Length: 105
Image (tube, helix red, strand yellow):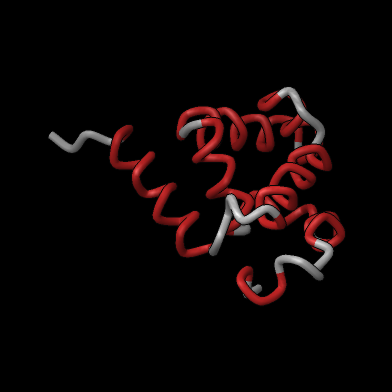
């Protein structure tokens, strides 16, 4: 989705709720989780819990201490207020986190 043109009038929370099972793989959700919570918590802890519980909402709750819908509300708020300007910018921020956390020797 085009964040710049649809940020104000698009219902992001409903959009995230609609595809909830796939949200761990949606670039905007995954990137925001990495930027906010870090690589280890998002990539290792969350996916380990998803694999062990096979329950996406429970895994989110246990990993981040928040229900997925609360996280969707936060992301939607950041889109509406312009903190998240584009998926490209968010992905760039995620790459910075990855570079800080992944040291290739």
